[in-house]
Structure formats: structure tokens, C-alpha cells
Image (cartoon, rainbow, N blue to C red; front, top):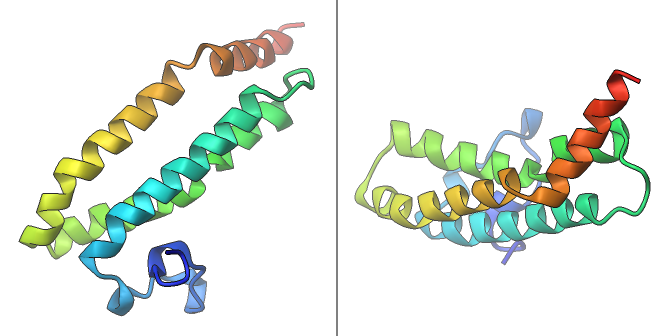
Length: 125
């Protein structure tokens, strides 16, 4: 789907601006699902990293772990705000819970929290 989904391809426009003229409502849900899958894999790699937790392999890695999801979500919610439309409003009922569940899974992940705590505790030592 990424070959056909402009939300999942790197834009060739200046500053990698989204190609809004190519984006259709049916692109959003598959892009969000794919981005969540990618982010989940990135977070799993972080929390299962056998190296001792460090700023680089934990916090910096987490900063970019859901970059695609952030980009796709930003485009969706910005388009929803300025363009609206029944198609986009209907997608909120699907995308909202997917995003919320994913965020909860990350925030409540004990293994990730343990790595963050280890990094935090190293500050004082």
C-alpha cells in the first residue's frame, strides 16, 4: 500500500511538504495502521534492547520511534480541522481509538518505563 499511499512515501516537494492533491480519505486509515505497526516494532526493539539503558538507546530512540505516526496523524488532524467533510469525520471514530490505544500501550509499558527510570536514575549518580 505504501507505493500507492502518498502518506507513506517521502514527499519530493520542498521541505517534504505533503502532496495534498494526491491524498484521499481512503489513504488515512491504512497509513495510520501501518504507522502504528512500525512504531510498535520500534518501541519493541527499544524495550527488548539487551544493552544497558542509556540516553541514546532509550530516550533518543523513543523520540523517533513513532515519527511516521506523528506525521500521518498531523496531516490527518490538520486536514480534518481545515477541510472537514463527512469522510474525514467518519474516520475519527476509527483513528481516534487506534491512536489512543497505541498511546496507552506505550505509556503503560512497564518494560519501557523501567528503561526510562534506569536512564533517569543515572542522572543523579
